[in-house]
Image 1 (cartoon, helix red, strand yellow):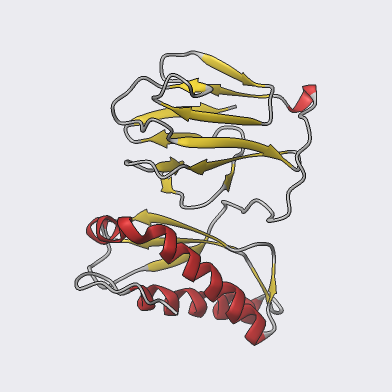
Image 2 (tube, one colour):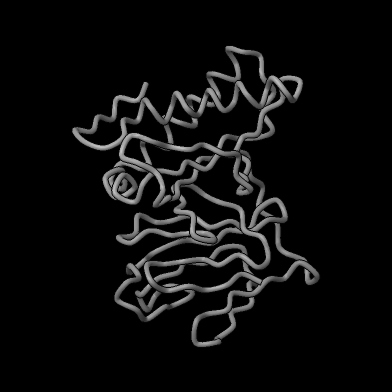
Length: 208
């Protein structure tokens, strides 16, 4: 576990240890029930160093959550989700792990058409509104995307929106500058709630 190695900055195994310690603390006061979503805060320089390996690191951390819960007999609230954020007050070897409000999209998904009362909208920076009436949208700079954002900070195909289980989620498609929800960098499909600010590089749109 945590085979990803770094020559400088925080070690992934340090994050893993802090993660399971956080789970233990919560389980003690919550009758063995632990949340499945966690936010990892590191220094800005560490987040930059970790950026190229965030997806495999998040995968290993999700495995760590599952394995630790199974080994200790904890009850997880859902599929594990890990998000990352920087904190300027943290040092090079420090990290803080806290339960996050961001929840995962269930692994088993059955796509259903949204009903009228559940219709949502994306509001772009220029005020343009895109009503979400289908179940899947691509977002990016490329003109063939369903929602086109003409900005050099946005990748050709930057992200993808999906509607499943009466819920909208967004997934980064390997973009250069990443996708953030309310400032949190996402590395896996992440559920959206009305009022969320979605960042693509320096561009921000809103989910309503």
